[in-house]
Length: 184
Image (cartoon, rainbow, N blue to C red; front, side, top):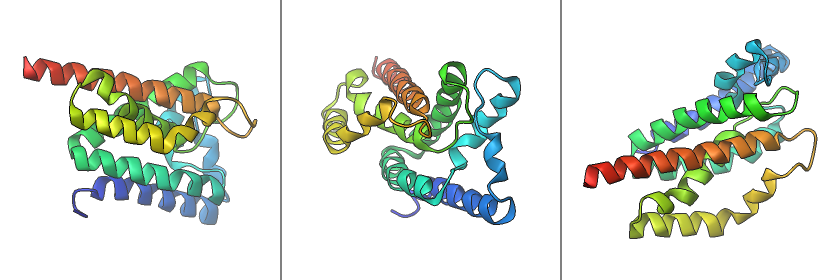
């Protein structure tokens, strides 16, 4: 079982390692490499932003949902975890870069919202009992996450949350279409 969820554990471990190295060796100086919307130099932040966090509280807030949703995806399929993670980082990051307000956007919450959007909407595109139950459980258990889609604080990238959610839904639709082609 541990081997099956190793990719999710590794992702969370990478976030913690980057946080500790950034805090102890760079005095949080790496945070400048987040997503800077509509600036060419901000594009590199698409790859780095999920691993950069502004504070310990920020990292702690992302750790549990990242681990939980990541493990659920790994238990479904390690390939699915890899595709959703890579797609979420790239598509969610690109959307954040395109739509977000001028700021440096960092943190794994966009990826958390991608996982949430993917798992919550999967039943719309793959109509099986298993995906329906999973989507219902995710929606009921984490309905409160949707508050993160509205502006509540200048320090929170709600745009990154929205971009992650959209990316997750797009990836679920793509997975549903691919699943439908296999069955045909």
